[in-house]
Length: 264
Image 1 (cartoon, rainbow, N blue to C red):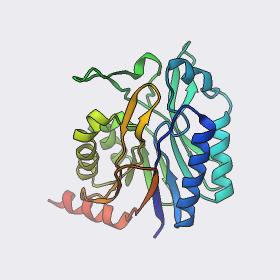
Image 2 (image 1 turned 45 degrees about the vertical axis):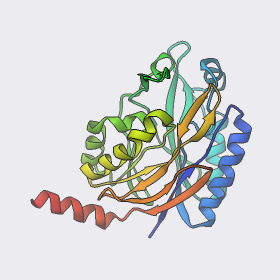
Image 3 (image 1 turned 90 degrees about the horizontal axis):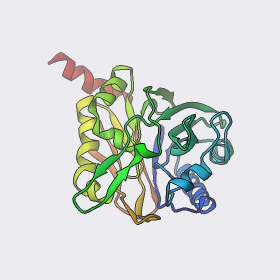
Image 4 (image 1 turned 90 degrees about the vertical axis):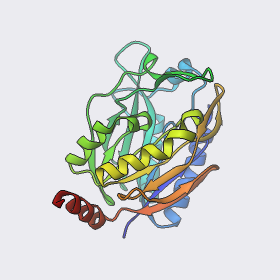
């Protein structure tokens, strides 16, 4: 049965270092038999500020540095790659899109998803996030057939919006990608609960590669990359550190559970 890999890493402001680390971890996924590797949000750049995001944002009309890297890597290693948090210039001045790209094992981009729900929050400890101040939200849901089943693409803060996942499941998704750079403060209380809830209520697998540790701009992410099965059981988890976890999306298990709940 085809294996899927969720990659956890700690990205910083140096794109070349981030891409080198990404290459090493994707190679590890390949060596251990994965046919698809999912990368965390902002794997190529955890920007220190809005200006850096704009500086390194990809052109809207043609692939840029990061997309070309992903295409070449997927083709070279013969693996599908799902990559989130690639900043793409918006048509709105001084704004970006937070885009996810899925490349097949020939290096062809088969779909793009622009993050719909943006992270705007003021926490009790003084942390403040305002993703909408520099990001234009997406509007369209995206599903895509892959070697490990039909994927519903989502991104980080999307996980707090159950209606999105219901739509994806109703449109045939057997697993959800939730690549994230989840804040430590909220992650320690909410991350596992949210991932397991999205799996349970939709009888679907959840694959959630995550950032971990400290980043530029005094930001800290929670880590705990997970793969969760449609019964809400955690198949694999990497609490901290760079690494790769693996799982299998069993379509028959998804269909069996969905049938049982439909019959009751």
